[in-house]
Image (cartoon, rainbow, N blue to C red; front, side):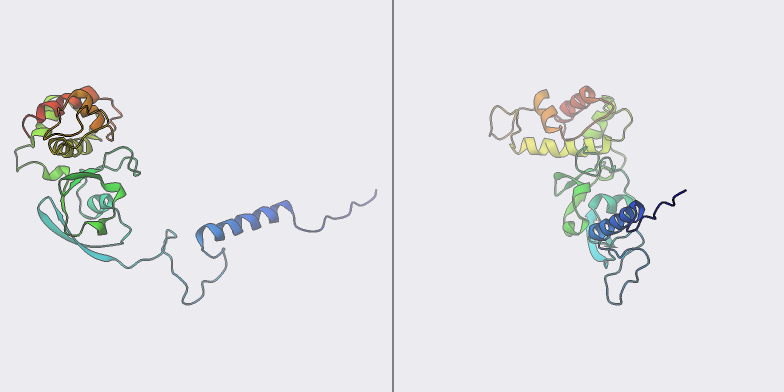
Length: 222
């Protein structure tokens, strides 16, 4: 029986392994497995992220000052939840699409998952924990309870903070995409206005009719 000649050159396995290693190096900048990091090269943490010195920041949250030293890439949401124990603000999508993380900064609503904590030195930050006055609920909180404006409750802190900020925007005359008059001392807050202005806050339980009713009632008291 004639012996088959052995194949020479790279095999399919070695080609795939080499391609994967090259892609890893290009995508991450990390050395391939088994290569030593030269002295003076940039160091990386356990998760493969560059080590960065913490930055000292003083935050005014719910009328209380917090001094923290954090990685400058830390979001405001992660600082609130993971470092300050203020877990009322929820992490939903972490991409600014659901509104569960909404807080008030200088009276204006923002998605805290899209904002770096180092940007807020000297700002006045209000989370859902800071809306009540002691044991007295904020009118928006009381309205959400009275109208069952929640089911699972996960989006509720963001909905409430967003609604408080939205009412101030309307009172200041900020128009929305459905506003008929585009200016004035205060725009009429119809159900269509409320729905449009709150469209950045998603309720996966679909409690929207109750949320609209709660905001409509609270608008008369805030």
